[in-house]
Image (tube, rainbow, N blue to C red; front, side):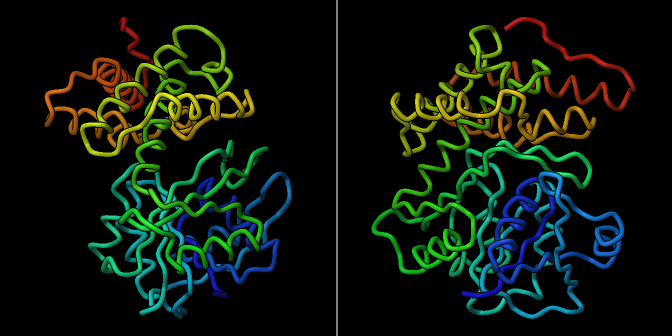
Length: 312
């Protein structure tokens, strides 16, 4: 494994790309002509230092060994088309998108044979424009869709990432781990956005923390019905992870709100509401979060400010 292509220069794309590049990996940022010109003109910084990425367009494409998708969920479709010329028969595809559906979309577009499953967790990266700052780089947890022993290709990718500055943990129960990460995001991302704070807001006792944990417990209940049960001990570990982050850091949905752009609420509360309905499971905390966030986003378009927090 030698070449790595990254699609998406959001927080995770910059974070993982910079660490790989600084440790000697052959990193290529896959972009269209317009983005390539803009990135070269504006530049990218990571913790205050310029990052000299190599920007490669589809017209210059050659297959890469590992292709990392690091876009927002809404940008995945376009990202797949940009990345298509870089996908060869042996290219392994890895998504660090939030949620539990991006691998299925990659498999539908490129075939399931080279798609690995993963989550990115534990980072506290904040991106403002083209400037990224972080204190904790987090870890990529990866594995196969089917539970069992670690496959050679999962071990090979994990070894490559670990050797090039990106912490990677291969696991045998990857889809269940994705449900755990979804539970985390449903809680911390949405609570911090609604209460207009940072990680410190949910690290201390109070309503914001209660809402975060309440939303997570609803995902825990749903995970059991879906066949990927999350234990109380695991839930406590995810909460402890939140408590370990820099108090001044902010999850992606809070950054979306500050930029007055649409968030990933459909990926989080929306997913829980739709899946819970199939089982007749009541999820009042996630329903409140969903309705509150939709009210906040509607206010962006009208030019007003309404966080919609009418009781939970």
